Image (cartoon, rainbow, N blue to C red; front, side, top):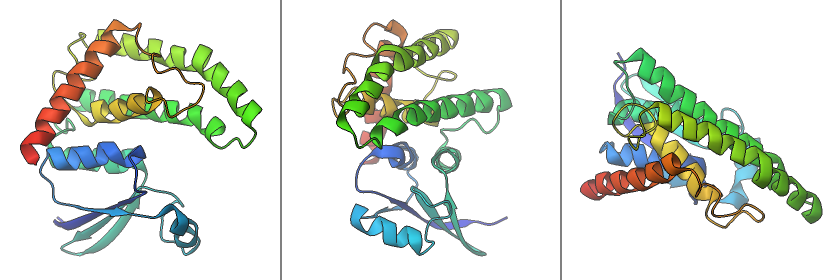
Length: 213
């Protein structure tokens, strides 16, 4: 069996899809190099074939038998979860629910994608209006029901922090940050299970990260 010697996580110098990966590795005390790719050099590196699927994040893994370059944020996050104890490797059904939540997070990201890349300001805001009034409230309803089904205990799956919590924590943080024109910062305020989950995950995350500093 290959043993991991070192890890290098490559992503842009801002939160985005790498944040839950960084959190998981740091919470688990897993050493890694946090390598930032300047946005201005991304296109050249992409053309040079440095990224397996043309995007970031990318995880460079040195093992006892060679080097591996891996991509896809959820795949990397699951590995980070296994290494850090934040993925339920011994419970297939809980692992399924974590995977479900990670893919739900990607559904939300995909909803935002078209408006992020729309250059026309009026079209962008029209798209954001549909997101704010219909699509994202639908997602909030799905998420509220998921949390209630888990017992409204402040976690997405089971009774402890997993990579699913970290992934969705950062997505909802982004959606409510005020950085997205047309997306209200109080989007999730009327969902009690989501509100309690956000408060709990923020506290648990900070406590776990604080112990690693």
